[in-house]
Image (tube, rainbow, N blue to C red; front, side):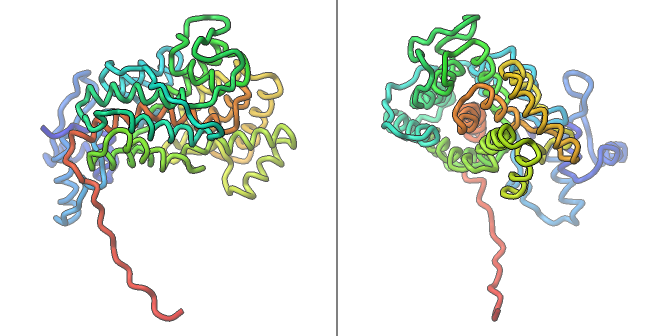
Length: 397
């Protein structure tokens, strides 16, 4: 059975506005059916693609090569939805493990790390990669691609990656005791991560902030790193190799490393003021880190939950510097804040290392990568074989 698309997605694939889509229905060019909630119209993917080909004069276009049909995450104007649920709502009501189970449609993960001792002196970025390589090397059935096996391995891998990070918190470790409200479990991924990133005692409030970041960052449809994971899955690479493909495309400053640029901007603003810090960022980066998003024209809905938690964790000076940067961006008509501003602000408020945002992001996205890996395994293998247009070298010059 062909997948069903909501009206907005059907219109986007046809390159038309919603009124035109409904006009196609009234003219008999398309048929629609009601969703189970009785409120939305759904359209058959094959029928949409057939109409798209006819509108191009019958020319065959490899639409399936360029698009991926997914039931994991939908991007709407008010943000992403994980299988119909808003992560902005889940940020303070669900654990990262629960959100991972939602994305995987499977709660059989084994959240127990493999006993590994990372070499001294590794950066957090390299420690994560080292952990993936070593965990894969130690898995005697890493090529078992059955869903239950992949989900179990994913839980082990995520906790192993976190355990491979150096411990920076004082008085924490395997016997972590949370200050204040003991409701976050010490063995939870957010608590384990807090123990390795925070410079002081770990509070329940800090764990809650990290958990919220993990939840809102867990997936974002076909981000570049996610597409790399799906391409690896299409070749039937095992989970560990697919994760390495994701990490390889994740670390650049335009993707997973963007929050570190925000952190640098905020530190610069604390020392020199918002205007000089913004001018320095624009001079060297040509962008104002933490603002604007190609998907969300009216602002990234994932940012606000993290900025709310930042307000709870920050001191007056930290709140003032973030407010000053936001006011400056608004007065100069820059786009609204994005999720990287929220991550960078949280790192500032908690005193975590400058690259902590990228570490949190990478661990968070493991949930989404695994979900897309599982989904890709049921597709036809090797479907991402693109074709190039050869260009002859220009003579002379």
